[in-house]
Figure 1: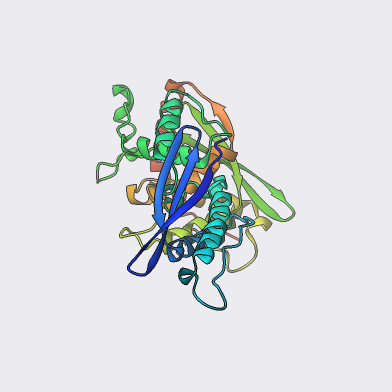
Figure 2: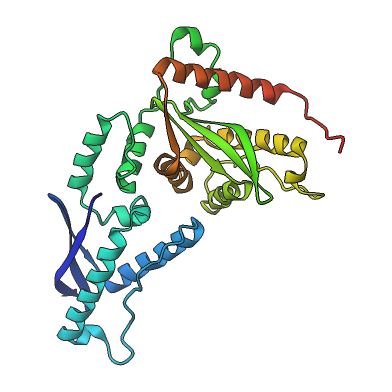
Length: 316
């Protein structure tokens, strides 16, 4: 796993404002940037917000506070002391892998090291759980720029649902194959199929966990219409009736495939985080390229047929 070190050894004063010269090192990578105390304070607020919104439950380092008396910029010793405090803070923050995928952190990391690690990973068929979140995200971005999927001619006519009206080819496909009830909570077993990889990923999730991503997408204020997330039951609980569980299972599967069919949503921070988390924590299942395409095609056909079925009415 990559380890970052931070060194703040100098500063500049411009227009009565102090700019700290920050050096970030990682193996043979290095980045030098200048930031004010207020810039880093704003970064800290963003990190706290991400920790809360994405429910990361991270024990974050404390950001250096302001002086109670006097102003730091009026004292050379005060400036140097604050630089040391900011150095310790940044070094701890940059080494929290769950934060490394966010743009506000990525802009502080060495690009050379990122580029070299990305090239190495591009030649590998597997995602390594020890690889940092930043590299995973960069690979994901590079793949998103090459969305054309080479599908055999005999499958193209059957897999039209992967291509939407804007010409976007869906890369990520979901199927919910099973469920189990633990302590009165329904856990759905979900399989992620990545059309760019020969590895599927299986993970479990609750209804409430998936709903959190719907909330995060709404906060993004994207200029696209969001698919509707399945609503809670007004009367009784879903886990009390197998029919309700199956109905919600189908609804959640449709929702996941609907949001990942919209390019703007796929490229959003919440869904990038979602995919990265699955690939780091889910169970990897190797499949052949032909089997992979057949799975995608089969799911697309089933999904299309489900959309055309009349809505089921419960007799309960």
